[in-house]
Length: 485
Image (cartoon, rainbow, N blue to C red; front, side):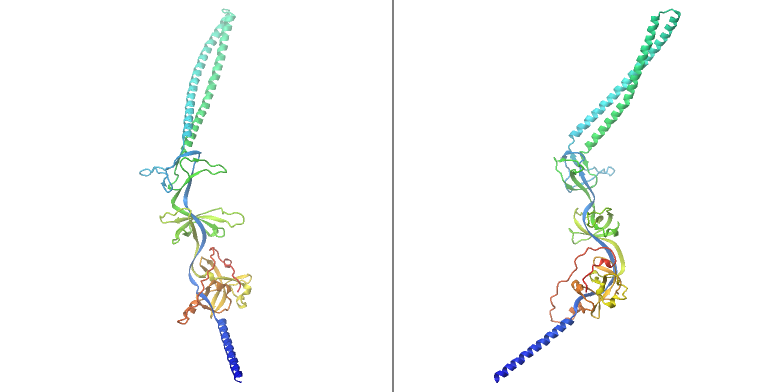
């Protein structure tokens, strides 16, 4: 009997414990079911928004010259090293600034060619003088023959008169006539020779001009052996050594680049802007330049020029080179450094804006009926709607909005929100799965209402969205649709 009573008591105790545990578990489950989701809430702010176009780039001197030889020769002198300052010279300065000789090439063969050309020119000039003397001599001979012919013709007339009177024989007359014919032939020959010599003089003059041109060409080639600086700048690269043979470029092979000279006082960032953004970029726009070598600094810049031809092939997106004049404040910025630029394309003042993370895409068919019907910010013909989640009476309310342009962090709200509203701005993983009418609570209010002496639960790391390249543009098409609620 005692054993039966003891067993019954144990059974009652166990049943009581099980019932209590069930009640406790049911209570905890009810608490969990009614617990609000922690979110971050912010009110829309009114202020200025700047549209930017972001692009990577590379720093280069605005003026850069590659020094190459215009003839094949051996280097005999390189007076400057990398980093040395050179000048193009200024004869008008006081005192005059001499130009910098960058390279001297072996000029032995070219100097010999010049001397040979000068000798040929001198020989040609002497030949012209000889030809002129010959012309003068021949002219005198023509004049002598002309005088002899005139005398012979007078004698022939006398002999003809004497022959008619019978005072001379026929043979005397014939001799006089033969003399006239002979002198006439000599005069004709002398005149043709004189004409030929006179015609040859211009030919020799042209040959003299050709000799002068040959000398000029030889001197020009000789000048190529001394290469001077075309700009004021710094030797940024030296690719050759004394004794090396430099060659000129051909159609398929580039020539030897001996060195590079650049003006480092004016640097530009050559940014590669995507074709979808190039339409909003114009010369004169302000830009912010961040150089990876100087991570703690930001430099100002101004858009200087825009390339007219985009790069890229096939189906790849085209990129246009945009030169941004860098304001370095007198500092020397090294060439070929990587940089990122934000070009300010448009400013909007006194606009209502929210963090871009709060703007989401939701399927129109998944929205509640009372929201789909009659909302002016909702286009029922489209598949996705641009929405934000407002906090109203402790619940998340999906709210269609009309958005405008955006910058790197915020998006303009044109319609659908008031400045007094409170909008869910994060965490992003909560936003992805947030439902309409879901209970929510500002995480800051939850932390403030926590009883003293209790330890807060270990918070998870803040969720961040993947970095996106900022683009200019307006309209819901800029926001990528998120998962359906």
